[in-house]
Length: 458
Image (cartoon, rainbow, N blue to C red; front, top):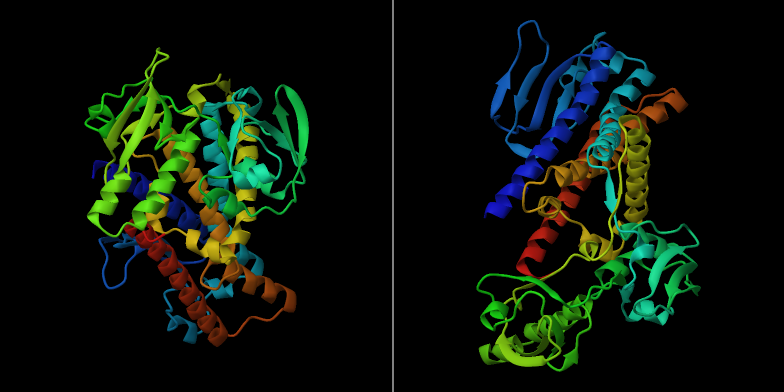
């Protein structure tokens, strides 16, 4: 429960900050061009609100709603998600959105997206300035990588050290490694001290690479136990930190990668179990391990937890190699942060093509999936890194040309600027309804996926 609350607080603080600044972008440009802002709200307020106030001599009411799905900036003379069309039937006033030149209305509409994107770049820059960059260079991973069957079919071998592709060399092991391998026609590896190239098709499915168990490639991590969970089956059986797992059910284990693969097989067997006796047969395993500092092998039988946990933890591969740390001065942190943020945006935009596939639709996540991205303990480094990432997502999603989003309004404004003709009010209202319907359907699908994952159906 504590973990859930910590993640929830991080998520709520992050999303509140992003929504406030996004709507603040619309607010700033509206005020700059003399457009009246009637309401400025954090979260939506259908039927009632949690807090509301209107300063003296102000035209704007500020408040906090109860539905944490975003926020809004209600601008006079504009058709938006509030569907307040009464004022649209009255003569246009000089302080209204509809009375302003198209270029001013365009800047008002892209104000929120602009703030979110610039905010992400600023946060990444300040992360570089305060924490710097710490990573393990792939060329220094002398134990190499562990590959699955698909990867081996292309010519990769366990312990190959991935150093790059025909797209670019690899700096560290992150999601860009998978992206580049999926699109590359050549991968460069070091095998037994020699550099060689492996031909690739240039069209490997990225989702398949990541969702297949085991994944396409991971750093090779020996199956040495780093620590144990108190009261776990492993601790009760006498296993200690530093012991090395050799085999499970007579299947050889050379790494944590293979350990996870073997547990995956047990999970498949458990799903097909029909009786309690069948389940216990799966949970009761034979384990061969080597005690720390001894050449002797021991064999024991132990019963895994109902969710097939032994209660052992592995060492992070980053703890096994020399860490490269790069510090940045205040001025140099900005180019570094901008490069990092731009790379994050490019990767996210590239991955969007998978959303329109069956597997992509299943991988959509709602608030639960987003909240789970935050660490289970309060970590300011990860908090700001996730906030910057969400800010980029918010900017990109909002600029999509879907009615009810900023990008939909931008599309209609560009149409007006090119044709010198405004879309009709009736069309705008219908488009707004259609856009909101699409958004709600996506929201339902994404959060339904979260529920199905939680129930174990995905």
